[in-house]
Length: 121
Image (cartoon, rainbow, N blue to C red):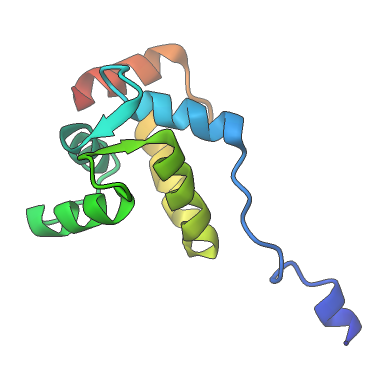
């Protein structure tokens, strides 16, 4: 095995931080019932600037709703995050961050979080 390959970060897989992912999940769980409904998911995508067609949104939701109960629970949310792995582009993460960083200062304040949450519904 070459030295270049041994030192490469390409073989490292994405490992989402559970605590951070719970925080993100809770922000999308607008009514705080411990699960993300189809409407909450739709609002989330709209807030992130993802203009999916209704049929695409339904397919994406159903693919994440592993048990088919009509909701995405935290376990399913984490499963989705693990499956995304290297498919997350840094530009997507930056875009999502900018949705919340309304004043563009590189930080998300509680006020900005509240304002975006209110806009989402």
